[in-house]
Length: 381
Image 1 (tube, rainbow, N blue to C red):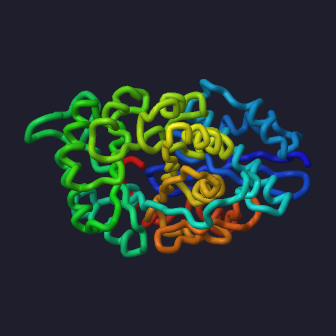
Image 2: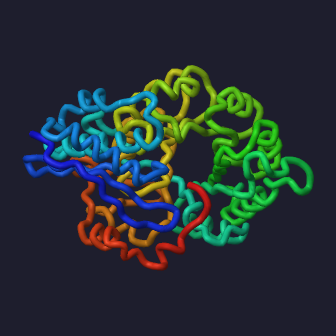
Image 3: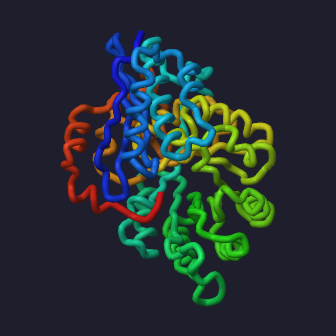
C-alpha cells in the first residue's frame, strides 16, 4: 500500500476558529482522516501539511512508527505538532480500515465501551453574564451531561488587572461559577478553566473563593511552564487540579510525570503528537497515579480519535466535549457520534470508527456556514 495524496480540509465553524482535517488517500482506495484543529495558525498548519505530503508520497502508510520518527521534532512548536498529530491519526485510521478493526483493537483492546464526557459550555455561550453561563449549563444538564466546565475569567489580563480587594478582576468570574453551581445543583460536577491567566498568589485566593462551589477540578490557574507553582497550588488548595493541554511530546510532559504536579493531565490528541503519543504519556502518568483527562474542545473527529485510545487506558478519567458549538456537528460524521446520558459510546467500526459526511463537508467547505453557527461564540476554549 502507498500514499497517493495527503491534503488539508478546512470546514468553517465560526469566528472562534475552524475545524481542520488531514486526509490521506492510498492506492488501495482507503482514505484516512485525522483532525488538526486549533493550532493557532491554520494557514501555517496547511503549509506544514503540504511539506509532509511531499515527504510521504509513495510511502507505506502502515509504517506508522517509521513515519512518526521521521517527522517528529522536539522543538517543532504547537503548529508543527498539530499538523503531525493530524497526519498520525489518519495513518492509524488507514491501518484500522485495512485490517477491518477499530483502532482501539490495535492498542490492545478497550477496557470500557462508554467514556464519560464533561460538557465544555464555553464556546456556546455568547451572553457572557452569570445568567448566560447558568442557562447554558442547565441546558447541557437537561441533555444528560453530569459534568460541566466553563472558563469564566475573561476579565483577567496578564500584567494589567487588579488582583486583590473588592475590585479584583476575578470577582466577576467567581460570580459566573457560583451562578452555574446554583443552576445545576449539587449532584452535577463542575470544573473551572482559568486559561493560565493568574499568578500563584492570586490563584490561591481565587481557589479559596471557589471552595464553596465544590469543583471537581481547578484547571491551569497559572501557565504549564510554571510547574513548581502548579505543584504548590495542587498541594495547597482543597480541590483537584488539571493542566498540560498545550504540551507536545512525552519528553515535554516530564515535569507532570515524574512527580505529582497536578492531579489530572490533559494531553490533546491534536497537539501532543497523536494517538501513540497520547498512549505513551498516559502510561508514564501511571507511575504517580496521575489521571488522564484528554483536552478536546474541537470537532467530533478528534473526539472519536481520542476515544479510541482513551478506551484502552487504565487511568482515563473523563473526556472533554465541545457542547453546543454548531448545530451541524451531529451530521458531520457517519455514523454519527452516539452520546447517551453524558457518555460517548465507543464506535466499533473500522479505523477511527467514522467517515466524514460528504454533504456536510461540501456545504461547510464552500463557506456557507449559517449566521446561527457564527453567533455561537464565546471567549477561549
